[in-house]
Length: 238
Image 1: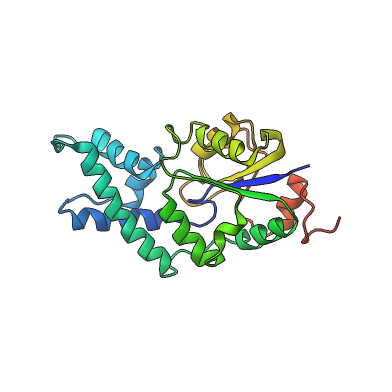
Image 2: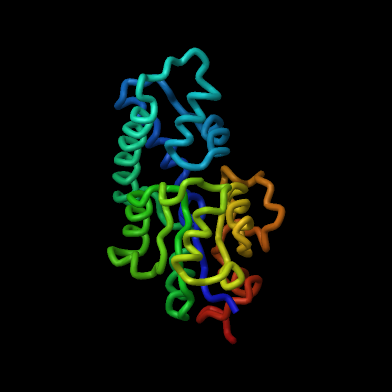
């Protein structure tokens, strides 16, 4: 019997990646950089999880001849902070809605007594901005653990964030299922021993999802997930 559902955020709860991309570009302009990440470039950069890590990957692998500032880590930290301000402003304005079925799933699972948690590489500010718009000001009441940002030393595809969430919940991997959208997310959850369901998006459509319990376009038909995962919730008769 499934006791908990653990949610990834970016790409899973909402199609946020283009919002992140545009926010990075605004931050670059603010900081006087002539960088611009188009869709094709961002698709390549999504190989790496975490915004600060993505900036470093871009500099190391795609910027030939670039001279790093003396305190490069501080430079990246500041740049990412500016990006986060742009992103949370966009989210707070309702620019990125939750994906189909997500709000209903969260509400129905919570009402059925299933524990909910978050396991993501994005910042706490980003999570809060998205879910406050999507679920309301009391969004945090739905979740028993909120694993995000730099709370663990190694980001996905490492399993650290899932192990952290399992410890917080006091549950085993067999008690839970995970919802992810990307290959890195899947590798992370599977490495923690958690049965994982995938909802694809534009950026992850061609990822390798070997090992996933099932792959869906989205969750607009929640009964499909409920039946596949063996969930007995209000939307599906017992």
